[in-house]
Length: 126
Image (cartoon, rainbow, N blue to C red; front, side, top):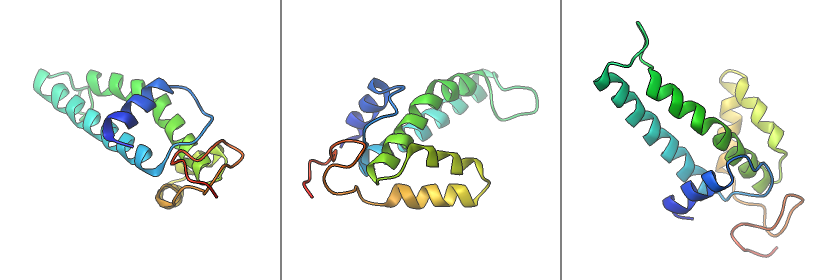
């Protein structure tokens, strides 16, 4: 999956928490959200839109809110791709250790063939 396909898939499946997303689609989406966050932060700083005594501003807040639901849904579908329930994303709320576990999960290759969440997005048979 290319960068453009991953971004398109992320927005076209905005609140779709079913199905599977390949590893490449997930990491391209993560890169996209990082780029949007950096650009939003720069715009906030240049335009003077930062909140008082903080590094965040209005543009960063709007961008973060716009990307929140699709980011969670992409993570859900990534977890489905490795055969785990999407609810594992709640581990990310646990400081440090939960985020490390999710990072390790996101590194794993797709479960071959179909699983309970749908067909393999890579199109590989078991």
